[in-house]
Image 1 (cartoon, rainbow, N blue to C red):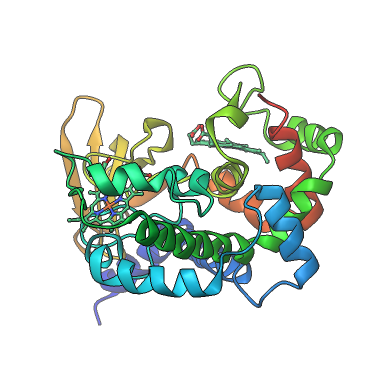
Image 2: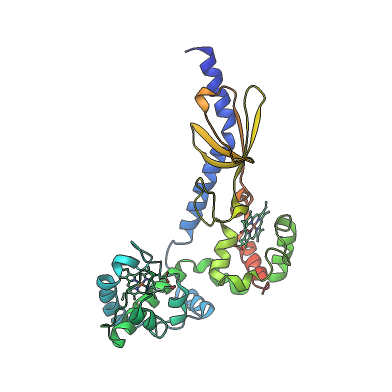
Length: 297
Ligand code: HEC
Ligand code: HEC
């Protein structure tokens, strides 16, 4: 092997260390997500969860079963047979309409009977009120199952200490956020469960050429070539072999690492701190922070 090639690989290795670190973090995040879904919490916690979410008693098992049958055949194609979203319809387990319906059919009924003309949701005029009620019971069960999986976190929301949360916020969050600025009234913007997931991992969407949904999440990059020339701007894409970016003038640039000996790539991810914090929180800290954020009405 030519010495130049060795050098290239060594440089490449150094250049993408940060990136490999990011991958590891992403994995940790996925693992954390899974931890929250392990096991079924004991009845007392389920009870606390239901009280906290104000979702009342569990559904009537028979009704939910009938509702499931209708749902899978009538709604499943679009919303997914487990209601978490399908070909064209949104996730109903996280729908506010469904959450507020609480198994009654009162909120869901009008949507089912009138549809959402022009938005891809057809009207189902032939479904009886009893059938809608059954579907509502099925969806209630799905909502509760989803909530229960998060119970070890949410249950403690009730016991979190907002004062301690505020102290943590001042120490670890205030460099980027302000309770009277960007996070003012944040608790009115999101339900507690959603608020929790927003601060645990606030990514709003995939990053492609058009960038993430929220520009404040935009990853930026500084590329330094062996000639000393540097390019800074929006990171469009990066993998083990290449990097692509757009500079302030809107010019696209990309480099293949193997062709650019000595290239150095520094990625700045505005959410990296969040991923770091995610690994640091103790359970208590997590719940204190949420209890504090909940005071920002
Ligand atoms: C052909 C696809 C399709 C079918 C079939 C369908 N839906 Fe929908 N549904 C949609 C779409 C698309 C939306 C989102 C409309 C919008 O953007 O407001 C929606 C929205 C909803 C909503 C409101 C969600 C929210 O949070 O705003 C409910 C509730 C709902 N559907 C229930 C049902 C039920 C129950 C059935 C079966 C009886 C059903 N849907 C069948 C496509 C479908
Ligand atoms: C290094 C900067 C930084 C630090 C430190 C930081 N965040 Fe963030 N945070 C961001 C960015 C960037 C976003 C994504 C843009 C946005 O939604 O505000 C974000 C998003 C959020 C959101 C979602 C806001 C929304 O409207 O959707 C919450 C809530 C949040 N952070 C809470 C916290 C808390 C609590 C801490 C401390 C434990 C913290 N952040 C620490 C940078 C930071």
